[in-house]
Amino acid sequence: MCSAPGGKTTHLAQLMRDEGLVVASERSKTKIKLITDLCKRLDLSIVKVLALDSTKVLQKEHKSPWNEIFRLESFDKILLDPPCSGLGLRPKYVDENTVNGLLQHASYQRKFFQGAVALLKVGGELVYSTCTMHPEENEVNVAWALETYPELELMDIDNKLKLGSAGLPNCGLTREQQNFVQRFSPTQDSPLDSNAFFIAKFRKTSPSQ
Image (cartoon, rainbow, N blue to C red; front, side, top):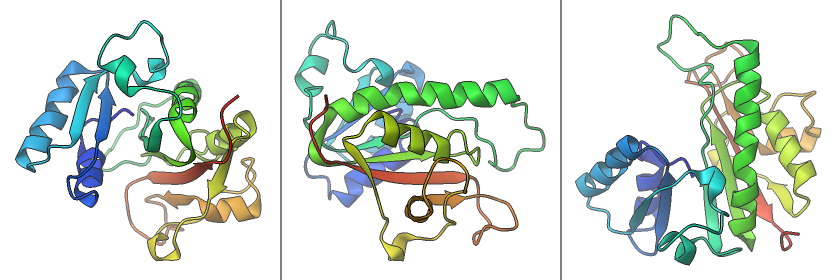
């Protein structure tokens, strides 16, 4: 979901050794060309790119091929990488985000979860990622998702892949859950001097209601 410019999409296809199917949805037709061009350059054939608003994947009026692909509880894994504030990306000398704008980003990101959870198989995995250090878009949204969708459980990440910091306290997550998510930021308390990034991994444990 929200697949442009295609870096994560093509990386997943490479990890799959170009076998199987990766469905990449992106509503911007201009950005779709970025994905298709990158797939061609990397000689990847399993990526199916659709011009589609990922907040509307459950709408019944979609015509083929959307209604053939977006069947309830049919996806093994989903990567949800929604638009975000980009707070903490570099190089950026001036950040024009406002408090209201930051809250709007967090609210908009929640619209993607309904479709993602409904499409995910029981036992399937959903990765939620952003490129911001804003807790409302990260830890708070993860806590909201766990409360809103009881069929989701937060998964721990392999220790070998834990390169960032734990999640922030006082954002709705337990201490254990804070250690399950990964936060990267350009702040001094971060173990890596990196751009802002956040990752949370969920498993679907029961059918959607």
